[in-house]
Image (cartoon, rainbow over all chains, first blue to last red):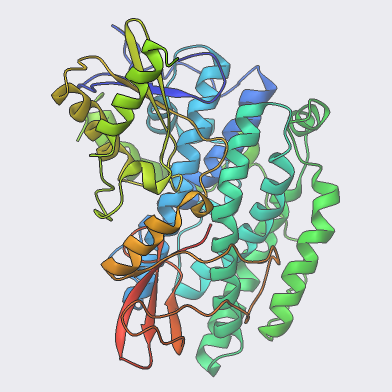
Length: 282
Length: 166
């Protein structure tokens, strides 16, 4: 289906289905996408894909069984959302790229996620603090996108929003428990906040692509979102007895493909199977 | 008068009642609300599904089961179309379906909770599906599948799952 309405058809699937007939998956893009809607969709999708993959790295390593399961569940939601958004991006782009082609056959410079989500997991406190900073942003952003002009995007956002609310409740509760917990959990949560806080700023940066998306009714005005995000974050951090760090360090660049050294390594792991066996199904 | 297409559609819907949720095998995909529609034309059958959660890994099994079930009933080329809107909600589950869940040992979904973004402490009480006590504790909002939470009954000391309202 390439009608751009967010629907996808599947029948009897076989090996190789889903790839462009008779062609190798394209890796030939320079990282420049000329359609602002596609670019916006990739930004939304890549945040989820990369964060979802990071969370999946916890599978089998969670501090307690319930959390191992919870992080894997949240990873599934995020990767599922990424898949829907990448499918839509491929349809809008109209060059025959599937969600798998976009996930597994783009290189780091073509990824559009914020740097926050690609950083290594660190300890459980760092994973949770990052998740909280992201979830609070995500719920607010999805609320806006649920009213997007492009119906397929609005539908995906409305669905993802329901899941994101559960994610936020989970991460907010953990931030409070860790911050207002033992001396060690407090110290670890504060250290995580000190390290990760500067990276959260990139979620609110706006460039021409974002402004074009807003103008077309498919974007979010981050200037409006930021104080609302701060309200949620301040409320939870206060209860958690955690302090927002001061400093001018404000990393940026992920939205245009400039990433930390960590993304390439993560992708090497995430993409290795699909690249070694293109079209593999299991 | 019922048209040929309509009676054909009803027949196919009845056959699809045989397709169960692979993770919660007491509910059919129709009772679960995943089966949204069947579009019948002269030479085509399209089954419209919507995923419960975005990343539900059981969706592929359900799609395959739909195609195979219809093949068994002599419909060779059924296709599955996935839609995301309107977003799946546990409100689509009938009282009868909820009763089946409870009898199976899974607390059925209650009403969808308020839209407070960070409700840190308040949650609706969930009754234990075994002893009906509401003296229960949430252990984790994420269970063995995306759609379930893990709870513990303080009265009968039994862990149980809740089908999360969403």
